[in-house]
Image 1 (tube, rainbow, N blue to C red):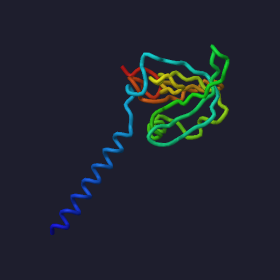
Image 2: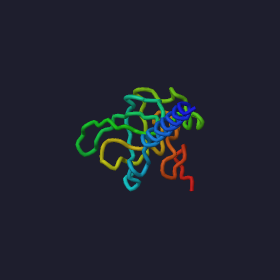
Image 3: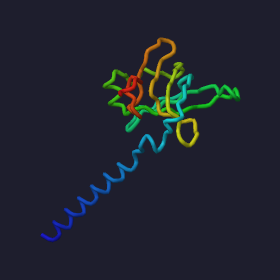
Image 4: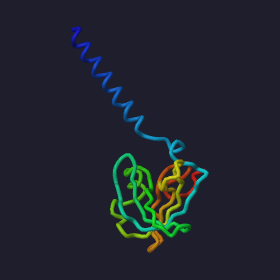
Length: 142
């Protein structure tokens, strides 16, 4: 009986530990992004990562000051939220030109959290994330 209680306690503790590690791995918006640093980016898709907990895509954007091309990582919401909003996994293809309204990372890197993602060729707004007070369509939810 003591062994059963000990085994049960170990399993419960292991479950709590795994849950804590998973919760700690997910960042808050305010910790990573600065809502006072909005950016508008227009560039060409180089990569799409459709994985949990967030979808990322990468675009090459010309830096207006230096003339150099920079590769930006754009974070969006989780796949299930994007799909519920009408996204399809293959809506965005390598080479597509995108117009992105986003919030820049606090560390000044070429990383941003998208609020609105628009396909330049078609004008189709794909939405983005539920960051700050934004909805998946990029409109303010207030």
